[in-house]
Image 1 (cartoon, rainbow, N blue to C red):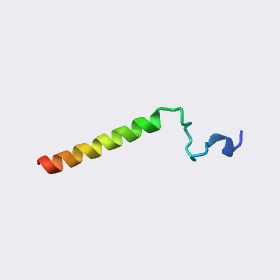
Image 2: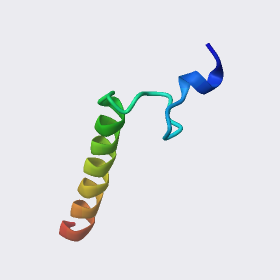
Image 3: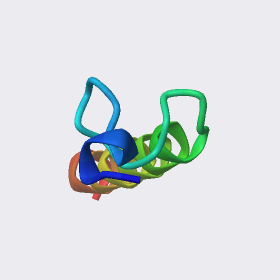
Length: 42
């Protein structure tokens, strides 16, 4: 298997059907939102 076969059109190693990129993005957004909330509320 060549390296090109391991990458999809988006250049990501994981396939678009994989939930992990979305899970990682959700965690990052949640952490960023919590930091903003603490900055405004604190």
